[in-house]
Image (cartoon, rainbow over the protein chains, first blue to last red):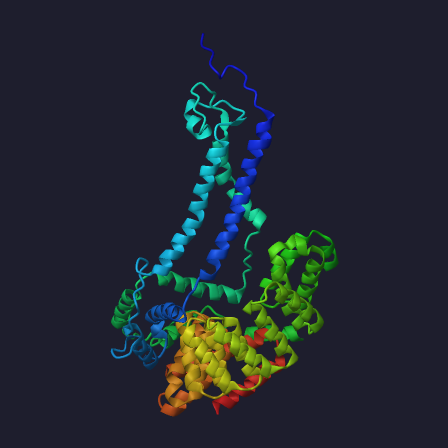
Amino acid sequence: MLITMSETELTLDPATRLWVLLPIFLITFLFNICVHYITTIFSSPHDKNVTPQEIKDSQALVRAKQLIRNGGLIPKEAFLSRKSYFNDPEDGYFKQTRPTLNMLQDPSAMLNMQMGKMAHIIPMMLIGGWMSYVFSGFLLTKVPFPLTARFKPMLQTGVDIENLDASWVSSMSLYILCAFGLRSIYPIILGETSAALDQTKLFADQAETMAAGLKQQDMNKIFKAEWEGLEVACYEDGLEKVLDQFLKQECLNETVEEYPRPETKGKHKAKLA
Amino acid sequence: MSKELLSSDWRLVYEELQVEQKKLRKNYSTILLLANHLVTHNSRALGQNVWEVYESIVLASLDCSDYEITTSALSKLSARFPKSTRVLVLKGILLEAKGHSDEVLELYQEIKRNEPLNRECRKRKITVHKSKGQNKMAIQELCEYLSLFIGDTEAWLELCDLYIIELDLYNAGFCIEELILSNPLSYLNHLKYAEICYTKGEEYWDSAAKHYTKVLTLKPDSIRALFGVILTFYAIMKMSRQNLQSKEKRMVDWAKCKLKVLYRNSGNETGCRMLENTIQYFDK
């Protein structure tokens, strides 16, 4: 006679609640808090280190773009002097060369990234191994709805009983659920890093993030592209016809718009009286 | 109203404080009231944000010249962040308010040496120079600042004003050109540029005329530009001494009419009379 286990009622030892369920919660929680503090200790000094030169470069690129776009609004000499500041064959800004810092060649950037990842992965592996050694093989709880057998590998890691109902949750699965599911709780407990929006700081942050974004690229290539763009741009007086256009438009409007006419004058006097 | 607010939930008070701080024209006594209330009653609930509230207390109390509150808030801040430059700059501002400008300059110089990218301290240093009347020093510092942060338009404007005070109109013009490039649709930049060009002399009247016209296309009822148009085009006509029925004449006539309409609509009778006199003076 085969009696499948799903039909029998399983009773869990109350001691598992005290010695397995609560320790799993506590350990994962405390462990993640420790990881948070360790990473902040390691990563804070490397945050956004931008050199003055990088800020200067990123701002110069913006300025050159503006010159190409709006150069027609300033006098010709002003345009040309700015153009030569960037593109002078001898000592133009875009003729300068910058040392190429590739991600692969820059050991410090590589190291930082690796350190950041390692700080997460190694303790995760260690604690996971220890957890499976100590707490493996318990059944802790049962989800209150029936599940198909496909959920078994997800909910019953470490308990390989074929006939067991799929809605039982094993200790290892609960550990994995805790390790990932508790993430959104930490910002609430540890306090979000407060970021007040302030006009001046907004600009500062913009400039720095822009420079930091450029850091990973080859400045020489960007300079060359920008140099070409400026070299092609020639001066076009955007204000040459402004007077003619203005007068033409005003002549059209003249019939519509109110001009000093006797009637308005009369009206005004009446108002004053 | 504020008493009602203070007795309500602290989150509302905090929200109100943030709204007040984002305004361009801040009411510092309100900020001080709200922030003080938050710090005394809800410092625990604020969590990490409490330090920002302390910072706003420092700035607001300086504006209300209540230095006792400033020092107490500052001591709390420096106990929590002993190495922070942001707190150091705040201390500098307190020194500035008390008038110890030489000590402050030393302090800022030191911060600048340690942290060359700190804008706050550089800008404070420039203002100290400016308030001491050392415009040349302020210009020098500002140029140094701008060589790093070329994109800071407010700094360009400040430099332009300093150059105008020093009557260095060529460099002032350069600054405004920079502003026009970065924001070509702002009529204020064109207006300022036109005024500088007009003041520079005959050779530049042409570009002054163009920029005044540009202002009028962007903002047709700019009084300054209308007067500028009359002055500039009269000057050009006098210089060239030729066909008076030209575009320039039409432009001047248009500007006069427009001015008259604007003054009349404002309903100021003495203003209208003065305008008539001024126009007669121009005609001579």
